[in-house]
Image (cartoon, rainbow over all chains, first blue to last red; front, side, top):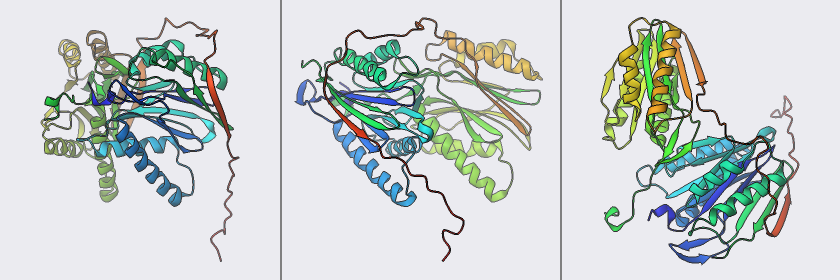
Length: 204
Length: 250
């Protein structure tokens, strides 16, 4: 089994009309043994910028701590929030630093930029950025997520429809992956508010 | 050692790729497909593989995506600094040397296979660079998993002194041959035409694989997902800071 699938995870981000959604499952496991069912995989960097980190949980948390550190330094020096594009480059640089002994995680970044333009992107473990206009996925359920999103996504959705689409795609995918599931965490971010919802899912 | 214990090395994002370049009448044309793969999965259907090196030099990348991106970014910044220092246009050989030095020092572990093209004071140049650091200087070149399919087109149709339109046509044919005959390559065709003092980046020059199967109404859901809890966090209004001219004055 790949080290990326040791803890199990499912992550997805989607773009709507002037908004975006980022969602994950809530399971933390060690191979087939479930350890926690309320695990946080998505982190908030500032009001309108989120990062979800799939893969090995220990590396994910270490990486998150380093990102918070770098983001705080940036805030102090620049006195403004980081643009999502800038943050993506920062993550990419931190990952490529460890080219020959990487963090075993695959991040998903989603944020609202200036003039409320949504930005989503994902990366592999060594920081190869993959920018997308529609949706990005990561984690041990990524294969099924690709399929679900490819079928369910449509452009320019309003926040409520976007939430429904992301949730359905996530639920459908994690039910076909043993290593992820136990409900979901969904953030829908619009220019005026952040809506955080916890989903009920199968408990097997 | 870890591999023996069953900890398989992670699979990275690769660009199982078709990239090509050729020299024509008054410059260089580069071409690339736009598929990025992770094992057998198509990770990105429309990625960019023609990287900027200098205003007069571009570089196509195949191999591990992070490596091609990192190595071209690094060298392009070195070239920019060199231009600030000398005040002259960068030369293709300079880029070539910087790239091969880096790749050679990593003994092939930085897996970037490149097609480097540009026009400088000494004329048009086209090179291929292998991950181990060896280089070739050629009138037409192909790289990546679709290199054989693309080279077939070049070998049968290339001649010296092609016009711009003939050149673009041949590059597009070569990339299409990779897209349709090599499984690692796919989606669209990117082209970059570099001539003396001018360049033209034709992103998605040709889209031979449009999506036809998706319904115009999309997918709708009859049953809603079950939500356990909802938390709404209103965002603060962003303040506009208007700068006055003498803000820093006493």
